[in-house]
Image (cartoon, helix red, strand yellow):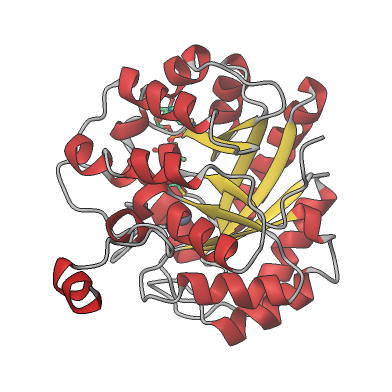
Amino acid sequence: MKEQPDIVIQEVSPRDGLQIEPTWVPTEEKIRLIDAFSTMGFSRIEVSSFVSPKAIPALRDAAEVFTRIRRTPGIIYVALVPNMKGAENALAADADELNMVMSASDTHNLANVRMQGAESLRVFADVAKLGKSSGVLLNGSVATAFGCPFEGRQAPERVLEIVRRYLDLGVDGITLADTTGMANPAQVAALVERVLALIPPAALTLHFHNTRGLGLANVLAAYNKGAWRFDSALGGLGGCPFAPGASGNICTEDLANMAHDMDLKTGLDLPALIAEARKLPALLGHDMPGQVMKAGRTLDLHPTPAAVKALLA
Ligand code: COA
Ligand code: ZN
């Protein structure tokens, strides 16, 4: 029997990672990457988003990607959707889970999906009905949950209100997203504690960006409060094109390396992840923020220098 991981990592680079890249990644390459992830131990992969191709041209091939990836039984292939049209297209492409997204801040919600929060919630009532009748899983994401680049801090009560509204719609999971890396560990601990009073840890995902270097510190703050599901992206890719200053998600290999060093099982094949991350600069034409892909795993040791050997001889 497969061992239960201590930390469940959802790979989001095909969606959050590629959405902000100026370089067009050919459909074949996206499919190859997702098929590779399917062999590395992930139980959940966010494959793409069904959004306006004018808003996110990089993911305009979502339907083709979804229909051509090799599905591994037991892996949940997730689609981000902002509205009904997205939900219908995601279902037509056989997504396993619809990830609805709205922001705690109305300003970011308007910038991102051109709706007030209240309108997103009205739309999601229909999306949820459709999702339920189709038998897919539903996730509700709260973007800018820890801060908005336009409005600043968001009241925890606002985040909790959105969580409750999602729960009323019958979602299977909730994601709290730190869209532009404004969260700090103290804030994360406090909010996670309040959200875990409403839902079990199995239903909560934290989605951190490493914009200010606090990504893994925030993971540990959430973990220490009982959360164990996290989003991350290969190489530390990622960012929302409608949030100024957005930068990469926390990096999957860095997170897995930390977890493994702490004897926390992720179920992930870290050497395979590192090998895949090392292909990204050639694919995308720039350096990656990921650290472990450059440094190697903590205990990937180097040969003793010849000069030291000579001293020992
Ligand atoms: N997928 C594809 N096309 C869509 C769509 C969807 N989910 N929703 C709307 N459209 C199309 C409409 O059909 C219409 O097309 P047309 O101009 O050819 O007639 C056009 O987009 C405008 O439709 P409208 O409903 O007025 O949308 P909008 O211009 O107000 O934009 C969103 C709203 C949500 C579609 C757009 O802002 C969006 O896609 N945002 C996503 C941003 C994102 O992914 N951010 C990062 C992830 S958090
Ligand atoms: Zn994100």
